[in-house]
Image (cartoon, rainbow, N blue to C red; front, side, top):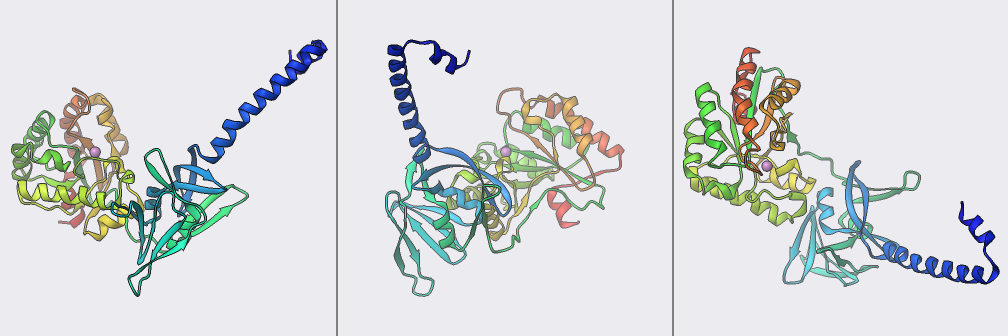
Length: 368
Ligand code: NI
């Protein structure tokens, strides 16, 4: 029975009450709707350089407010100034600073190096531990292009500079080479087992290490280097890089270089972002500091606790000349990487039989 039918059959006095109740319900349900529009966080997608980027946002007086760190996707560096309690954006030579609750944006004059206040039509807000800033106003001040596609209802942000950095997912497809890579270590459980197998089979691999673990396992670090394996930087604490400021990204990378230099006297120029997650600003920062950003072409998904057989099949399915295989040597839960150890000798034997040569990522990329 529909609501209309219900109303049709009730007596007049009840009808009045029903109408009043309906009004109350409608009014009260309208309030949360209005506040959801004005202050609650919503999930949306903004297109940056034509790629969809999911982001939380809030609407304030018709302005789309996005977390300040969202701007890292556009290639703008984003940092926090403790003294002024403000967010500082740097895009090329342009610096813009904004602070929560203040309807001003402070812009650095490139010639005089002085900071000047300019009005901001809407003040940034603090929500969920983040500073949300007006997307259009900050983007335009930084020199980014912002458009709204009314037909597709999409907001598009474009960095006017063509992207020159890139991620390396594989080596030369004309060489029958393959690189085994192991992330997140070293540790005392899986690393020695993996090193034993590699040593027995006589093949090199590349270890993308987490800086804070390096000092804890000096013996493992010594073995990795002495047994001819390659090293890469996999940050110091393994964070989601898009969620931290540009200065913090730099510290993550540099602290690991320091730990590696102290431990084994090496400063690799290979960098792999945790989870493969990297904004354009992070990518440009790492490249500017002389790193080659290495991802992978074969994801074994070993960290999900797959069996040795499943990992072996994942490699068989996706391997090709110049392949970079992603595996792990530190488990999130005990026993999760047993499959990695089980699959390794089989993967090596199978790829050898198919004519592949195992090399470090360094050797694969440097062509020696
Ligand atoms: Ni990792």
